Length: 202
Ligand SMILES: [Fe+2]
Ligand SMILES: [Fe+2]
Image (cartoon, rainbow, N blue to C red; front, side):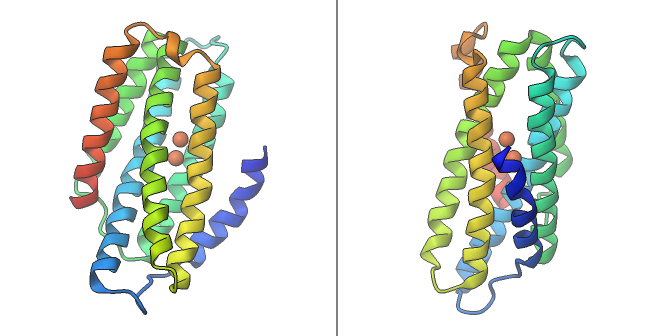
């Protein structure tokens, strides 16, 4: 519940986050725009993954409430990234509809396989995203004399903490016991890393 209470604060920060144009180099500004582009695509995919899982998991699945809770948090993450992208005049990824379709297919596929596969999907995705957000926070902290970059780092820290809560939830709910865990988790992990590379540029 603690993370839910932090959302109005982080949303307010996101709304007040403006482009860190002063004191940053052209390269740093482009790097920040690239971060926002990929995060925007990632949060869209996260929203789609949970939509897909909720569409295919049985209605009486004991994991529905947990997945719905994570989905509510992802919807807020997407709203925050929508705001950041528009405030910072970032061009969204040209593959925006593709990220949605791939996220939905991944969610629907793992949801069809059952609760453990759905949790495996969350575990792997959030593990990759947690590392990705940590890399961005480190990068933003380096631009230490810029208020807007600091603001953005604070927003990403809150998102990162919630993604890591999702990871822990998945681990607590038997993600590792999913059928074909090793090959499927490798495919999902590789796919997520490739998507991050593509969405940061295009
Ligand atoms: Fe998220
Ligand atoms: Fe998440």
